[in-house]
Image 1 (cartoon, one colour):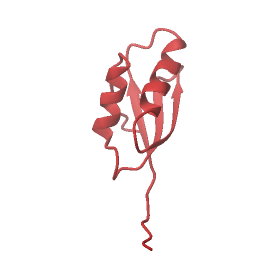
Image 2: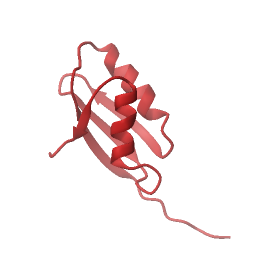
Image 3: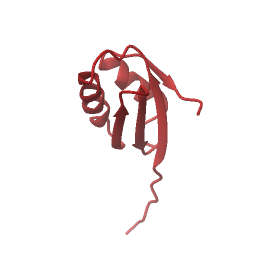
Image 4: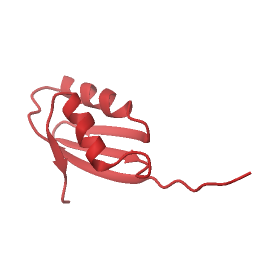
Length: 79
């Protein structure tokens, strides 16, 4: 039996082009499907996408790509 330690990373992306609250659900569904993502919360008012993920499974670039598949551009938040 082997035990592997997994690490969960909290990443915040800043999204662009939000136009309505339905964007929230669309992004949460798309990013939530990515393997290694354990939680996604999109904050419409601040355009923040908060993601809990395992960095050994999914990278920040993969997360940005998932947001792009939902139809929105995003970048890593600096704060």
